[in-house]
Image 1 (cartoon, rainbow, N blue to C red):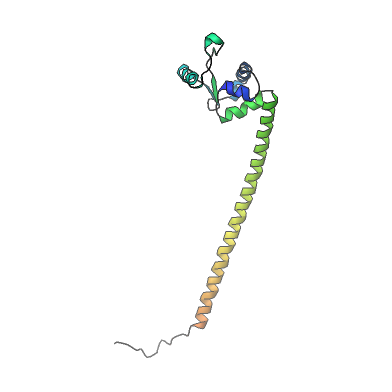
Image 2: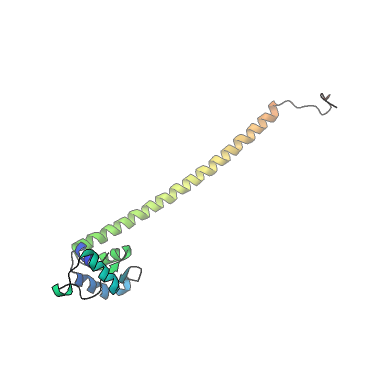
Length: 149
């Protein structure tokens, strides 16, 4: 997302957002934020119709933020919206952690159930083999053979 759009989302001015980013630049590595090139900014201006410099438009190239950058912004801005977003992110991480713990526990239980089932089937088949030996009559090795010689 572009800095001006995020400023609207977080209810701050674009210059305030960019100032806070510059003050906390270590929190925004290249995979969190980057500055658009002049060609990219021109293409963007043509696509969304931003105002020209004559009408008080942008004087600097805009910053673009990735998903991680958007989340990091919520931690450095002091508007009510940014605070709410930051709290929501923390709650989501907590729920995600508990979900992952539950998933790990369920996977463990499924593995134990599978091991128990394999062991049970092995026992059943062994007993069936033993029963077959007891039920099937044994043929004498000295019996008279029938058929072709």
